[in-house]
Amino acid sequence: MKKIYFDYAATSIKRKKILEDILNQADLFDGNPDSSHSFGRDSKKILEEARQNIAKSIGAKPSQIIFTSGASESNNTVLAAFKNEKIITTNIEHDSIENTYVPENTILIEASDEGISLDDLKAKITDEVKLVSVMMVNNEMGLIMPIKEIGEFLKDKGISFHVDCVQAYGHLDIDVDAMNIDFLSLSGHKIGGINGFGLLYARENLPSFIKGGEQEKYRRAGTSFVMGAYSMAKSFPLMISEREKIKDLKNYLLESLAKSKINYQINGNPKKTVDHIVNIYFKDYRSDFLLTYLDMHGIGVSAGSACRAGAVIPSKVVERIYGQERASHSLRISLGFENTKADIDRLLEVLGDLR
Image 1 (cartoon, rainbow, N blue to C red):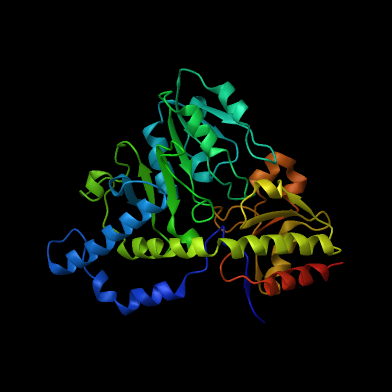
Image 2 (cartoon, rainbow, N blue to C red):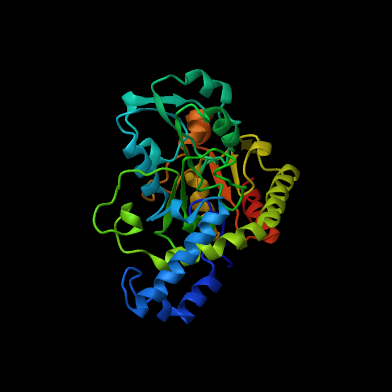
């Protein structure tokens, strides 16, 4: 039985060719990039080339890129810097935002099934607000937020703008200057890179969150994860080349569902969601049953975020927008570069057998 993976929003299938390239030139990664000998210089060259390429991918300067362990750390770093300030965020952010902000200092924007309202955000801006933090693409429903419009509104208002771009990177164009973004978080494993690596783009300096050595120009301590940087930088151009394929797969999934006899509804407006995430409500079956049933047939999907320690917990985003009952009957299908139309046919065949 062929196993089929539809959980790229949790973590991408690893890009085997990139891993092979790392193994084939493993000696170049041996040294600590902060060491002065040739081994260190070899690693430093790879690290800085990755920084340049990643910076270019979001329209930033290499000096503005701080390598971290991932977007959760990057998000925590930004919110920690503003913990005593009034901030605005949304009720559908990643747990690394939701579990970090100070409730009494936070104004929440409530999302609908089409995202958040720019007018609602504008109405909540006060002289006390120092930070707005909004994810570009929601990780559970794929909703695309009006980041460029928010950035334009905040420009010259003395309010910093932070964007979690984890689910947008590689799928949507990102330009930190054109979007007036001050801080931006990314994770490499969402696009096929090695887990445990990410970055924080910072237009201005922030207090160091991880204390220790002088790495990252005193902005983040810890020995640099060179393989992580290399794998992320090499994955990005591949993501760009795969965009049309992912869009085609999403359309094929939606068209095939419409032709099927499966009792379903799409969560969120498909025209306002990113191509690789499709969240589906199955009225007749609970999501915990469907997860087990599909897994027994070699198909991996999810119900909500994977950041809940393996527990089968319904999507908090679907629950907050539609209610608990709908959330407990919904699944997230997230597509990636190894998926095919035959995989989608198999998914719908297995689901169709439940009738």
